[in-house]
Length: 267
Length: 267
Image (cartoon, rainbow over all chains, first blue to last red; front, side):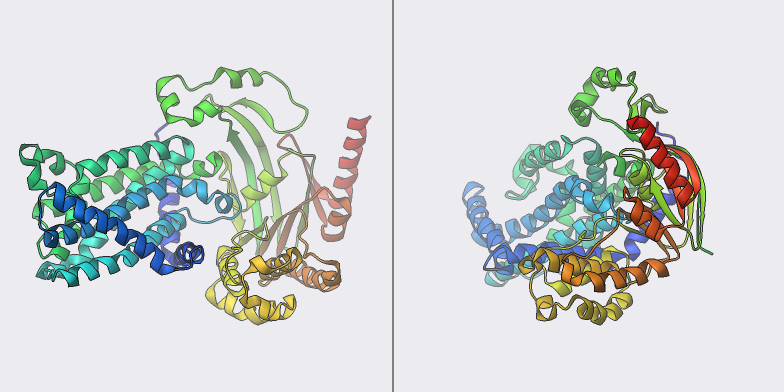
């Protein structure tokens, strides 16, 4: 059942390679998705940013009052954290619906499955780019100066996105076969929100700090959030995310290689 | 030289009971659902054979040991009643379904044209749709750019090309889809039923375009229930029955064999 042939491995490599080299198609499809959102509201691009802004406005105050922080500290913290959280969770949730949503394409044309994974990643990055405007506004208002560790920011963002991509791919493959999985994933993510330091600081957990420390999402978020806030991600953050990426992709690749050709039959 | 070589290909579709699509259910209870094993013992008059697959799952054997060679210049018509495996064979030729047994090798770029309007977005303009549909068909940026004038010319859409295709009539949208799909002459063309271009006033021009398109392609494989269409476009025929290839040869022989079988069945 789990035996892998070299043909399967080679085909999976081909799929990834062909998908990456036709990145233009993914880019095109992702932009089309984003444009569709613009068209559905009169405010266009502003609408997406605005709804994120309202969420941050509410959560920023809530975090300040509930956890006794200064607004100048809570607002940038919540905003940077939620920016990442929205990117990560939306990508995984979209990942779960990925192949099912693209079933019409997958069953009608020969197209690397990787194209649709990249489409999802890119669409969510574009949306995160829109949300970044809110962070910039908040950072300017509260005069938050990014730290020199911003030099490594592109690298940390890239690492988080690569890590995220295997999570989305696993969710996509399992969800194509088992249709109740997207709902389970959405439930798990809702629970994870409360145990990830987004509204509160990890220190505030006191003795229960391990809850945050053992949560991989804490480190993925810290890696990108800290430089924005003027801090520096710890070596631990880097190591955890790096290990998660390498191990995760190894497992995911084998899993994908085993079931790739079956996915079209499940749709 | 262009060719398609199929050696003993087997394609099986797993059949899932709704419960087997649930991870929660599958983790808890043995895989084989009783309701499905019951139908396994029944013989059916149409469709692929139903039986246990390699791992004991219930499968429909959509293609059961099919072998043939199609060479450059061949125009092959697939005949057989509903569920005989025509569409499955076309999708296997296109590389969409990977056979569970045997091997299929296509020397040349296979261009499946099943749904003319696949990849078209009603909210996007005609031009945007040309790009999107073109990319979906695997055309290069250069190929699309070169085809733009020709498509505009042929469709006579004029300024409509800059409007969302939601505003088009059904015929106009179909004309656009048809023009994009036939913009580049493929090496190996795979069709499920003949394609058309909408309104009657347009028909003679569309016919001329179709004729050029179909006659220039290196290999044509088309499935159809219309013997007159097959007689018009094909020189060879391939008869399928319950997923098995019954005969492959000159079109006239295959058509008369098929018609005599239909006559006997209606007896």
